Amino acid sequence: MEKISQVWAVYFTGTGNTKKTVQQVAKAAAAKLGCECKDYDFSLPKVREQELAFAPTDLVVIGTPVYAGRVPNVLLPYLTGKITGNGALAIPVVTYGNRNFDDGLMELRNIMHSNGLHPVAGGAFVGEHSFSVTLGAGRPDTADMSLAAQLGEQAADKILSLSAVPAQPVAVEGEDPIRPYYTPRDRNGTPINILKVKPKTDTDKCINCGLCARICTMGSIDPQNVASVTGICIKCCACVKRCPKGAKYYDDEGYLYHQHELEDVYARPAESKIFL
Ligand SMILES: Cc1cc2nc3c(=O)[nH]c(=O)nc-3n(C[C@H](O)[C@H](O)[C@H](O)COP(=O)(O)O)c2cc1C
Ligand code: SF4
Ligand code: SF4
Image 1 (cartoon, protein in one colour):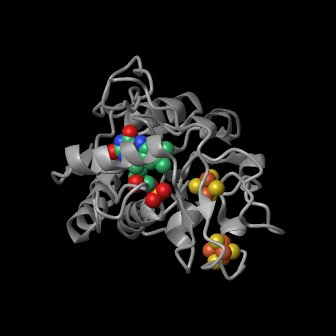
Image 2 (cartoon, helix red, strand yellow; image 1 turned 30 degrees about the vertical axis):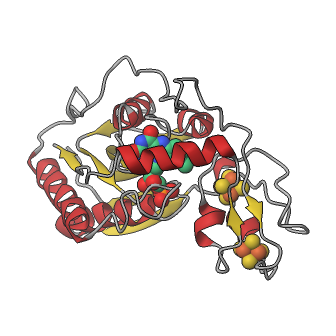
């Protein structure tokens, strides 16, 4: 086993949960391994056009949120097509909004393994749900962050004790083969389709600062007219939660029904989990 010389915090984030969690895991691992930690944020479309290649002496902490129980499907072309592991070790990390991470971590682990990375540890952490300010409110909290640090430290200890790269990726919770995407349903059990839903802009509140257009993870907000969403919207809620004036909102009936149902049914605190 070659010595690890570089730790990476690599992540996609809409509302900041995944960034915070991945950075915490990476920082703790880097401290234990005595090397530096570099950030790589692929939340913006321009970044996802670029190739990303690692070295066998890298440890890559890579994270995405869980969308519909899986890795966000819009990220699949990037995750499967642009990342080359070159035998680097990896810690896949997902954050999820207090419902369930279902097969999200398993899928991320499998994708990284097929990219030539070796997943040696993993974690699923609760984060406030993108759609809500009550579901998983305040998560990741202090306990989640200390568990994230524990994951980084224990993964580093495991790596230091390895004599060879493990043949099998770390065992994580979830099913393999990966199950279909989670489908929200209305009160009659009919699937709710929110694919075409886009946030609206309250023009009385909006000060035209342009932040939402700069941070839209799909590059879909027109900078000349921020009320206009010209491309696809994945409901990441970056624009909704990060607008300084609270000017972005959803008014779609199906979306709001789903949001309120999640808030009612999944109110209990869910558990963050680590796998080593
Ligand atoms: C489209 C969409 C689907 C989601 N699906 C799930 C889910 O299936 N289970 C869950 O617990 N949280 C789900 N969430 C919540 C996010 O996984 C959670 O809030 C995550 O921490 C967001 O990460 P970020 O702050 O890095 O963007 C979903 C969020 C979005 C936007
Ligand atoms: S971030 Fe908010 S205030 Fe700024 S342009 Fe967008 S909607 Fe307007
Ligand atoms: S418009 Fe949609 S994709 Fe873009 S930041 Fe807002 S919620 Fe995310």
